[in-house]
Length: 148
Image 1: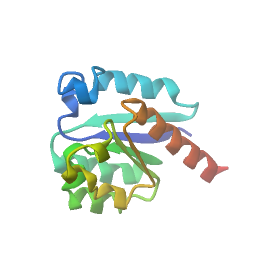
Image 2: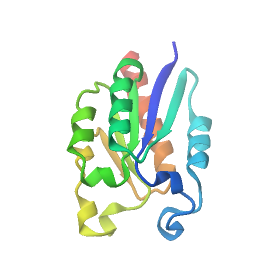
Image 3: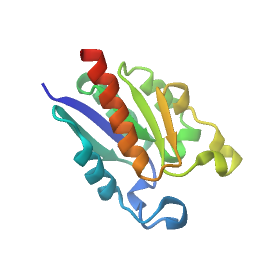
Image 4: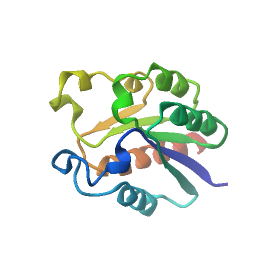
């Protein structure tokens, strides 16, 4: 049985590699996806998604309830504003790992608060795009241990 992990990306991450490369680097979201797929253990798959629309992300979280063992999410700016995404994540029973490419704690003060962190089982910030791989690894280790 294949275990599915949703990797969800919020607003402006479609511009990764082009938008503020001094903060976010030059790698693209396609690079992030390829890196995550390379490290997947046997028996795991990922569904890699990005939207600039809050409701679409919420719909994907609802969809994940029925098919995924875990969620890795970089909610982008919705991190700091979306009670709706937080509420949707609270309906998901598997592990949730929150990822931020930059160290949000070294940035503007409004970025220091995260609604998503209130639900997340782990938070990764400031590791660049490698944070996604760490998030995927963590979901795999948590779900492998739960099924052992």
